[in-house]
Length: 244
Image (cartoon, rainbow, N blue to C red):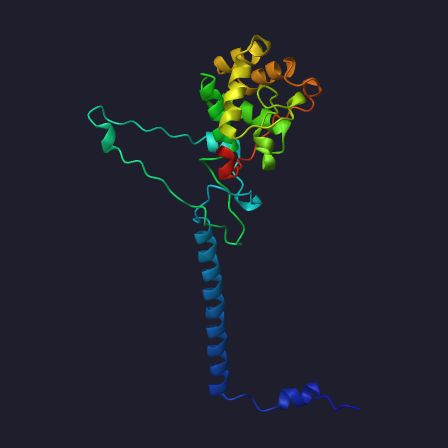
């Protein structure tokens, strides 16, 4: 049988010396400070991670996902004085393809080669207003045709049949710039006048959506609306090579 100390013997045991007790308290305070320093370093790392540059060619990362509403809600404009010469404005570029998120996975782009950029290019090619309403509804239209994560599939984001060499919209284009120009040509046809007019009027997304559903763009008419994705679409980059 093992002999365990009784409560009485514990009470009668000689107290630890004052010096040893103070030493223990100092050690505990030192350990506490060490934990706080570690926690502070972790917090600093977390704050720093939010400043990691985002690449121009990457897959999405859930913790970095940017949505259309966030991107479009913070548009900016630049006004240059009339006395500034064209060659005086510096045109800089930023190469960020080597940057990754803290976990080592590619981070998400917020401009340059995204689905929002392509939506804006379609509107520009069609001579239509590049507005928040119009970019939003085209992003939703693209989402109704392809997953946002692979919106650039076959370089044909809206599964357009015109000029793609494939029936039913399953053809492909050499690059996304050509694809945008062919969507613009489609929107200029009388078949899609309803969509064109809604975009030209900078209509609310829900109004343009109804014009898309009513048009012959999709033979299913997107389930007469049940399969049209009127959602907040994540902003996702396409491979740089897809842009030609």
